[in-house]
Length: 341
Image (cartoon, rainbow, N blue to C red; front, side):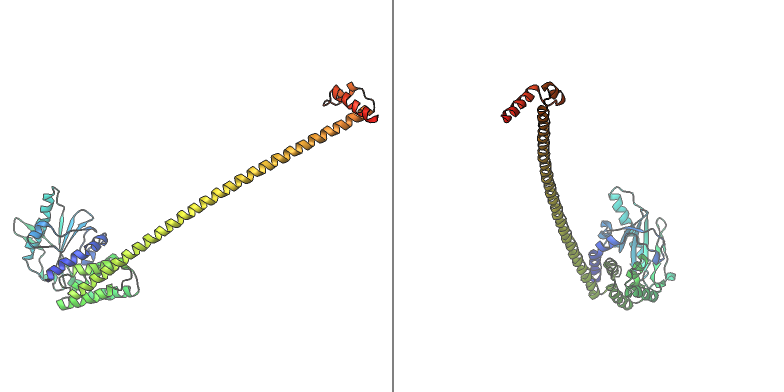
Protein backbone atom coordinates (compact mmCIF):
# COMPACT_ATOMS: atom_id res chain seq x y z
CA UNK A 1 0.00 0.00 0.00
CA UNK A 2 1.46 3.36 -1.06
CA UNK A 3 1.74 6.45 1.12
CA UNK A 4 -1.07 8.14 -0.87
CA UNK A 5 -3.42 5.19 -0.24
CA UNK A 6 -2.55 5.27 3.45
CA UNK A 7 -3.32 9.00 3.49
CA UNK A 8 -6.77 8.49 1.96
CA UNK A 9 -7.52 5.60 4.34
CA UNK A 10 -6.57 7.79 7.30
CA UNK A 11 -9.07 10.41 6.15
CA UNK A 12 -11.83 7.83 5.78
CA UNK A 13 -11.19 6.44 9.28
CA UNK A 14 -11.26 9.80 11.03
CA UNK A 15 -13.67 11.85 8.93
CA UNK A 16 -16.56 11.20 11.33
CA UNK A 17 -14.61 12.44 14.35
CA UNK A 18 -13.47 15.59 12.55
CA UNK A 19 -16.91 16.25 11.09
CA UNK A 20 -18.49 16.05 14.54
CA UNK A 21 -15.88 18.16 16.33
CA UNK A 22 -14.49 20.68 13.84
CA UNK A 23 -17.56 22.92 14.08
CA UNK A 24 -16.70 26.31 15.58
CA UNK A 25 -12.94 25.97 15.10
CA UNK A 26 -10.97 28.67 13.23
CA UNK A 27 -7.70 28.96 11.27
CA UNK A 28 -6.61 31.91 13.39
CA UNK A 29 -3.61 30.04 14.82
CA UNK A 30 -2.23 29.71 11.29
CA UNK A 31 -2.43 33.45 10.71
CA UNK A 32 -5.56 33.24 8.53
CA UNK A 33 -8.51 35.55 9.18
CA UNK A 34 -11.48 33.47 8.16
CA UNK A 35 -14.97 32.80 9.59
CA UNK A 36 -15.42 29.83 11.90
CA UNK A 37 -15.88 26.34 10.48
CA UNK A 38 -19.54 25.36 10.12
CA UNK A 39 -18.98 21.79 8.95
CA UNK A 40 -16.53 19.46 7.23
CA UNK A 41 -17.40 18.56 3.62
CA UNK A 42 -16.44 15.44 1.63
CA UNK A 43 -13.29 15.83 -0.48
CA UNK A 44 -14.06 13.21 -3.11
CA UNK A 45 -15.39 15.68 -5.69
CA UNK A 46 -16.17 13.60 -8.83
CA UNK A 47 -14.53 16.03 -11.28
CA UNK A 48 -11.45 16.21 -9.06
CA UNK A 49 -11.22 12.45 -8.54
CA UNK A 50 -11.47 11.85 -12.28
CA UNK A 51 -8.18 13.68 -12.64
CA UNK A 52 -6.64 11.50 -9.92
CA UNK A 53 -6.43 14.47 -7.61
CA UNK A 54 -7.79 14.67 -4.12
CA UNK A 55 -7.77 17.75 -1.96
CA UNK A 56 -6.70 17.53 1.69
CA UNK A 57 -9.65 19.19 3.44
CA UNK A 58 -12.83 21.01 2.49
CA UNK A 59 -14.84 23.09 4.94
CA UNK A 60 -18.05 25.10 4.86
CA UNK A 61 -17.55 28.32 6.83
CA UNK A 62 -20.02 30.26 8.94
CA UNK A 63 -20.59 32.92 6.26
CA UNK A 64 -21.56 30.29 3.65
CA UNK A 65 -18.22 30.37 1.82
CA UNK A 66 -15.96 27.33 1.41
CA UNK A 67 -12.38 26.79 2.51
CA UNK A 68 -10.38 24.40 0.38
CA UNK A 69 -7.25 23.46 2.35
CA UNK A 70 -4.12 21.83 0.96
CA UNK A 71 -0.78 21.13 2.66
CA UNK A 72 2.52 21.47 0.88
CA UNK A 73 6.06 20.60 1.96
CA UNK A 74 7.60 22.25 -1.10
CA UNK A 75 6.72 25.10 -3.44
CA UNK A 76 6.12 24.61 -7.13
CA UNK A 77 4.28 27.15 -9.25
CA UNK A 78 2.77 24.25 -11.20
CA UNK A 79 0.77 23.26 -8.11
CA UNK A 80 -1.50 26.21 -8.82
CA UNK A 81 -2.90 24.30 -11.80
CA UNK A 82 -3.85 21.56 -9.31
CA UNK A 83 -5.59 24.14 -7.15
CA UNK A 84 -7.49 25.44 -10.20
CA UNK A 85 -8.66 21.88 -10.85
CA UNK A 86 -9.89 21.69 -7.27
CA UNK A 87 -11.81 24.94 -7.61
CA UNK A 88 -13.33 24.10 -11.00
CA UNK A 89 -14.24 20.62 -9.71
CA UNK A 90 -16.23 22.19 -6.88
CA UNK A 91 -17.81 24.74 -9.24
CA UNK A 92 -18.81 21.93 -11.64
CA UNK A 93 -20.44 19.99 -8.85
CA UNK A 94 -22.63 22.98 -7.96
CA UNK A 95 -23.39 23.47 -11.67
CA UNK A 96 -24.51 19.85 -11.98
CA UNK A 97 -26.74 20.29 -8.94
CA UNK A 98 -28.21 23.54 -10.36
CA UNK A 99 -26.91 25.46 -7.39
CA UNK A 100 -24.96 28.69 -7.17
CA UNK A 101 -21.34 28.09 -6.23
CA UNK A 102 -20.33 29.95 -3.05
CA UNK A 103 -17.13 31.94 -2.66
CA UNK A 104 -14.11 29.64 -2.35
CA UNK A 105 -11.00 30.30 -0.25
CA UNK A 106 -8.00 28.41 -1.65
CA UNK A 107 -5.86 27.89 1.43
CA UNK A 108 -2.39 26.43 1.22
CA UNK A 109 -0.66 25.60 4.47
CA UNK A 110 3.09 25.30 3.90
CA UNK A 111 4.97 23.07 6.30
CA UNK A 112 8.13 24.07 8.12
CA UNK A 113 10.19 23.41 4.96
CA UNK A 114 8.94 26.56 3.23
CA UNK A 115 9.66 30.22 4.02
CA UNK A 116 7.24 32.98 3.08
CA UNK A 117 9.78 34.70 0.79
CA UNK A 118 9.90 31.64 -1.50
CA UNK A 119 6.18 31.71 -2.26
CA UNK A 120 4.01 33.76 -4.61
CA UNK A 121 0.39 33.72 -3.55
CA UNK A 122 -0.88 34.91 -6.94
CA UNK A 123 -1.50 33.10 -10.19
CA UNK A 124 -2.29 35.17 -13.28
CA UNK A 125 -2.57 33.79 -16.80
CA UNK A 126 -4.66 36.61 -18.15
CA UNK A 127 -8.11 35.06 -18.48
CA UNK A 128 -7.76 33.39 -15.09
CA UNK A 129 -6.49 34.97 -11.91
CA UNK A 130 -6.25 33.23 -8.56
CA UNK A 131 -5.10 34.40 -5.16
CA UNK A 132 -4.01 31.87 -2.57
CA UNK A 133 -4.43 32.37 1.16
CA UNK A 134 -1.14 30.98 2.42
CA UNK A 135 -0.12 29.99 5.95
CA UNK A 136 3.49 29.29 6.89
CA UNK A 137 4.04 26.85 9.74
CA UNK A 138 7.75 27.75 9.69
CA UNK A 139 6.72 30.96 11.48
CA UNK A 140 5.32 29.07 14.47
CA UNK A 141 7.40 28.83 17.64
CA UNK A 142 7.15 25.03 17.66
CA UNK A 143 9.10 24.37 20.87
CA UNK A 144 7.20 26.99 22.83
CA UNK A 145 3.85 25.63 21.61
CA UNK A 146 4.76 22.01 22.38
CA UNK A 147 6.04 22.88 25.87
CA UNK A 148 2.84 24.82 26.63
CA UNK A 149 0.61 21.99 25.40
CA UNK A 150 2.63 19.42 27.34
CA UNK A 151 2.30 21.47 30.52
CA UNK A 152 -1.49 21.72 30.18
CA UNK A 153 -1.89 18.02 29.36
CA UNK A 154 0.27 16.96 32.32
CA UNK A 155 -1.91 19.11 34.60
CA UNK A 156 -5.07 17.46 33.15
CA UNK A 157 -6.39 20.82 32.00
CA UNK A 158 -8.79 21.23 29.07
CA UNK A 159 -7.36 22.67 25.87
CA UNK A 160 -9.03 25.60 24.14
CA UNK A 161 -9.90 25.55 20.42
CA UNK A 162 -6.75 27.45 19.45
CA UNK A 163 -4.56 24.94 21.30
CA UNK A 164 -6.36 22.00 19.70
CA UNK A 165 -5.71 23.45 16.25
CA UNK A 166 -2.04 23.98 17.15
CA UNK A 167 -1.82 20.43 18.46
CA UNK A 168 -2.92 18.75 15.23
CA UNK A 169 -0.71 20.86 12.96
CA UNK A 170 2.39 21.10 15.14
CA UNK A 171 4.40 18.19 13.60
CA UNK A 172 4.24 19.87 10.19
CA UNK A 173 6.00 22.98 11.50
CA UNK A 174 9.36 21.18 11.47
CA UNK A 175 11.63 21.30 8.43
CA UNK A 176 12.86 17.82 7.56
CA UNK A 177 10.81 14.68 7.06
CA UNK A 178 12.71 12.94 9.86
CA UNK A 179 11.94 15.80 12.26
CA UNK A 180 8.28 15.73 11.24
CA UNK A 181 7.98 11.97 11.79
CA UNK A 182 9.73 12.18 15.15
CA UNK A 183 7.44 15.02 16.23
CA UNK A 184 4.39 13.14 15.02
CA UNK A 185 5.31 10.28 17.38
CA UNK A 186 5.96 12.68 20.28
CA UNK A 187 2.74 14.58 19.65
CA UNK A 188 0.71 11.37 19.42
CA UNK A 189 2.29 10.15 22.67
CA UNK A 190 1.28 13.42 24.34
CA UNK A 191 -2.23 13.31 22.82
CA UNK A 192 -2.89 9.85 24.28
CA UNK A 193 -2.46 11.39 27.74
CA UNK A 194 -5.27 13.93 27.25
CA UNK A 195 -7.88 13.01 29.86
CA UNK A 196 -10.90 14.45 28.06
CA UNK A 197 -11.80 11.70 25.56
CA UNK A 198 -13.52 14.04 23.13
CA UNK A 199 -10.45 16.30 22.93
CA UNK A 200 -8.15 13.28 22.80
CA UNK A 201 -9.91 11.73 19.81
CA UNK A 202 -10.20 15.07 18.00
CA UNK A 203 -6.48 15.64 18.44
CA UNK A 204 -5.46 12.14 17.35
CA UNK A 205 -7.85 12.18 14.38
CA UNK A 206 -6.56 15.61 13.39
CA UNK A 207 -2.93 14.52 13.57
CA UNK A 208 -3.72 11.41 11.52
CA UNK A 209 -5.39 13.42 8.75
CA UNK A 210 -3.23 16.55 8.76
CA UNK A 211 0.08 14.67 8.80
CA UNK A 212 -0.98 11.78 6.59
CA UNK A 213 1.72 12.54 4.00
CA UNK A 214 4.55 12.05 6.50
CA UNK A 215 3.18 9.80 9.23
CA UNK A 216 4.64 6.28 9.39
CA UNK A 217 2.46 3.19 9.34
CA UNK A 218 3.23 2.19 12.92
CA UNK A 219 2.17 5.54 14.36
CA UNK A 220 -0.90 5.69 12.11
CA UNK A 221 -1.83 2.20 13.24
CA UNK A 222 -1.47 3.17 16.89
CA UNK A 223 -3.78 6.16 16.42
CA UNK A 224 -6.38 3.96 14.72
CA UNK A 225 -6.22 1.44 17.57
CA UNK A 226 -6.69 4.17 20.20
CA UNK A 227 -9.66 5.54 18.26
CA UNK A 228 -11.17 2.06 17.88
CA UNK A 229 -10.70 1.34 21.59
CA UNK A 230 -12.35 4.63 22.43
CA UNK A 231 -15.23 3.73 20.13
CA UNK A 232 -15.64 0.41 21.96
CA UNK A 233 -15.50 2.22 25.31
CA UNK A 234 -18.11 4.68 24.10
CA UNK A 235 -20.37 1.85 22.95
CA UNK A 236 -19.92 0.14 26.34
CA UNK A 237 -20.68 3.41 28.13
CA UNK A 238 -23.76 3.99 25.98
CA UNK A 239 -24.97 0.44 26.67
CA UNK A 240 -24.29 0.91 30.38
CA UNK A 241 -26.21 4.17 30.39
CA UNK A 242 -29.04 2.50 28.46
CA UNK A 243 -29.13 -0.36 30.99
CA UNK A 244 -29.11 2.08 33.91
CA UNK A 245 -31.90 4.05 32.28
CA UNK A 246 -33.93 0.86 31.85
CA UNK A 247 -33.34 -0.12 35.50
CA UNK A 248 -34.33 3.38 36.61
CA UNK A 249 -37.49 3.21 34.49
CA UNK A 250 -38.39 -0.24 35.90
CA UNK A 251 -37.77 1.03 39.43
CA UNK A 252 -39.92 4.11 38.81
CA UNK A 253 -42.70 1.96 37.35
CA UNK A 254 -42.57 -0.44 40.32
CA UNK A 255 -42.53 2.50 42.71
CA UNK A 256 -45.48 4.04 40.92
CA UNK A 257 -47.41 0.76 41.07
CA UNK A 258 -46.56 0.31 44.77
CA UNK A 259 -47.62 3.86 45.58
CA UNK A 260 -50.82 3.43 43.57
CA UNK A 261 -51.57 0.15 45.33
CA UNK A 262 -50.79 1.69 48.72
CA UNK A 263 -53.01 4.67 47.94
CA UNK A 264 -55.83 2.37 46.82
CA UNK A 265 -55.45 0.23 49.96
CA UNK A 266 -55.42 3.34 52.11
CA UNK A 267 -58.52 4.69 50.41
CA UNK A 268 -60.28 1.32 50.81
CA UNK A 269 -59.31 1.10 54.49
CA UNK A 270 -60.38 4.69 55.01
CA UNK A 271 -63.71 4.02 53.27
CA UNK A 272 -64.29 0.92 55.41
CA UNK A 273 -63.35 2.79 58.59
CA UNK A 274 -65.62 5.70 57.73
CA UNK A 275 -68.49 3.34 56.86
CA UNK A 276 -68.03 1.43 60.11
CA UNK A 277 -67.79 4.67 62.10
CA UNK A 278 -70.95 6.01 60.43
CA UNK A 279 -72.80 2.74 61.15
CA UNK A 280 -71.65 2.77 64.79
CA UNK A 281 -72.68 6.39 65.12
CA UNK A 282 -76.13 5.74 63.65
CA UNK A 283 -76.66 2.72 65.90
CA UNK A 284 -75.56 4.60 69.03
CA UNK A 285 -77.74 7.56 68.04
CA UNK A 286 -80.72 5.23 67.50
CA UNK A 287 -80.16 3.57 70.86
CA UNK A 288 -79.73 6.91 72.60
CA UNK A 289 -82.93 8.26 71.02
CA UNK A 290 -84.82 5.10 71.95
CA UNK A 291 -83.58 5.27 75.51
CA UNK A 292 -84.40 8.99 75.74
CA UNK A 293 -87.89 8.33 74.35
CA UNK A 294 -88.44 5.50 76.80
CA UNK A 295 -87.21 7.62 79.71
CA UNK A 296 -89.43 10.52 78.59
CA UNK A 297 -92.50 8.28 78.30
CA UNK A 298 -91.81 6.65 81.68
CA UNK A 299 -91.45 10.02 83.36
CA UNK A 300 -94.71 11.26 81.79
CA UNK A 301 -96.47 8.10 83.04
CA UNK A 302 -95.25 8.68 86.61
CA UNK A 303 -96.48 12.27 86.49
CA UNK A 304 -99.89 11.21 85.21
CA UNK A 305 -100.09 8.55 87.95
CA UNK A 306 -99.38 11.13 90.65
CA UNK A 307 -102.01 13.43 89.21
CA UNK A 308 -104.55 10.58 89.17
CA UNK A 309 -103.76 9.72 92.79
CA UNK A 310 -104.39 13.36 93.70
CA UNK A 311 -107.82 13.09 92.00
CA UNK A 312 -107.07 15.46 89.12
CA UNK A 313 -109.97 15.44 86.64
CA UNK A 314 -109.24 13.65 83.38
CA UNK A 315 -109.82 16.81 81.32
CA UNK A 316 -107.26 18.73 83.38
CA UNK A 317 -104.64 15.96 83.10
CA UNK A 318 -105.06 15.84 79.32
CA UNK A 319 -104.64 19.64 79.12
CA UNK A 320 -101.42 19.45 81.16
CA UNK A 321 -100.04 16.32 79.45
CA UNK A 322 -100.48 16.70 75.65
CA UNK A 323 -99.05 13.21 75.00
CA UNK A 324 -101.98 11.60 76.80
CA UNK A 325 -105.55 11.35 75.48
CA UNK A 326 -108.64 10.94 77.66
CA UNK A 327 -108.70 7.22 76.83
CA UNK A 328 -105.04 6.91 77.91
CA UNK A 329 -105.82 8.60 81.26
CA UNK A 330 -108.97 6.50 81.85
CA UNK A 331 -107.15 3.29 80.98
CA UNK A 332 -104.40 4.18 83.51
CA UNK A 333 -107.10 4.95 86.19
CA UNK A 334 -108.55 1.49 85.72
CA UNK A 335 -105.10 -0.13 86.03
CA UNK A 336 -104.41 1.74 89.27
CA UNK A 337 -107.91 0.82 90.63
CA UNK A 338 -107.36 -2.81 89.81
CA UNK A 339 -104.00 -2.79 91.58
CA UNK A 340 -105.61 -1.32 94.72
CA UNK A 341 -108.10 -4.19 94.88
